[in-house]
Image (tube, rainbow, N blue to C red; front, side):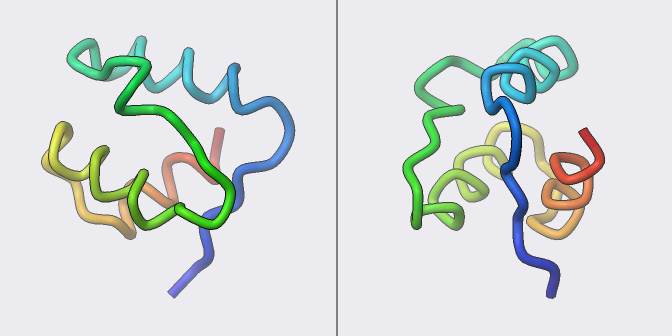
Length: 61
């Protein structure tokens, strides 16, 4: 399984995710280093996508 790569400017990635998924809040997108699975779980719940799909989407941003 690919590891989630949150590199560069997380604020830019957050903005893109909020544009794509209007139901996401800042709380949903709070990133704490070492807790990527928790972040992915919140995103998975809100978007209905699998963790692998979300990892790929974030890594492509």
